[in-house]
Image (cartoon, rainbow, N blue to C red; front, side, top):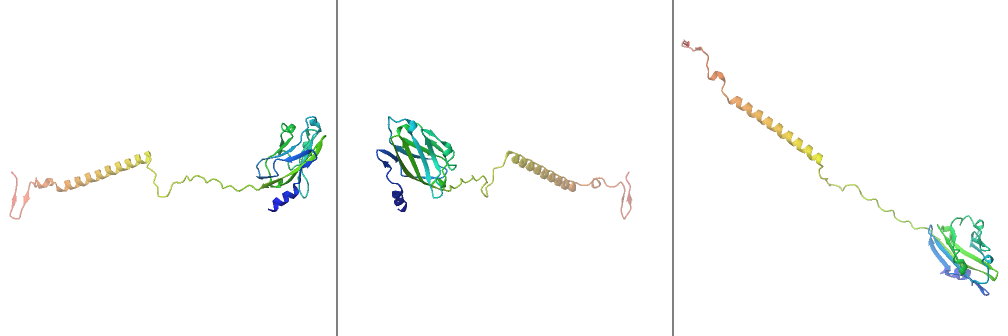
Length: 216
């Protein structure tokens, strides 16, 4: 509400006799680092030369009034521009003959906020008009989350072909060792159960308590 009242006070009528300078918007709102186009209109005269047109635009502040744009006799004067706006202001030459002053301000800063006043001088009249620009700080945007590349817990990946080959090799070696041990055990038991040779062929002489027997 207070800002609206102040704008009504500081934005008086832009009419001076038959020569009129006006603004397409009385106030603008933007964020820093954005671009914006400020536009003024003025009365044209088909019998007047473009060399008679002079424009002087500045930002009104408490400390100083930095120059935004300066046009002298239809020619831009870049050296008059304040360093605050150096390299950031473009003007549309094609619409100037139609009585429209369009200034594009790029890469806005918060210190660009304020009241902009443009004076227009011609050989058939002069006047000025103001507009308000408010540049707010850019909002913090959350950074995109990085994709989760880690495997979830308790998740087992399928065995690779190399792992399957090693598993089959170890399994085959284990079966071979078990079969060898089993064969060895059976051979030992078989050898124990077989009768010894002396059980079938007794000694040629046999001695007993009653006498001896000799083989013929």
